[in-house]
Image (cartoon, rainbow, N blue to C red):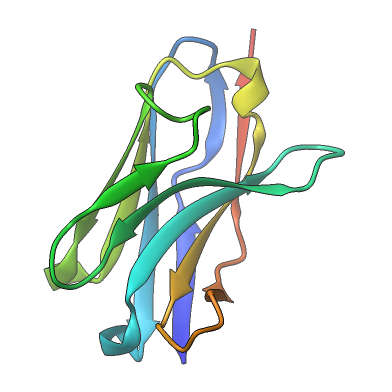
Length: 120
């Protein structure tokens, strides 16, 4: 099993930048795709971005993240990052890191989340 711990959340002003980190441990060699999701107050959890863990670094973003967010990874550190630029109040949410371990079940490993609050 893979354990994920997010960090880097906090209170930021609109227009600022913030970088979230996700530290993975356990069976990290099983990780296939790493993703970031978020759940805003009163809304369903939604996909933000994902990156291929092994065999390249292909990325994919939700429309809301394109051009403002960048997902990256450090395989040596078993870490994934989400750089958030020009944040907006609508980005306020709990952000979750998730791992797809290629078992055909999608994202099955989740972190506890880190709160990002954007003030105007």
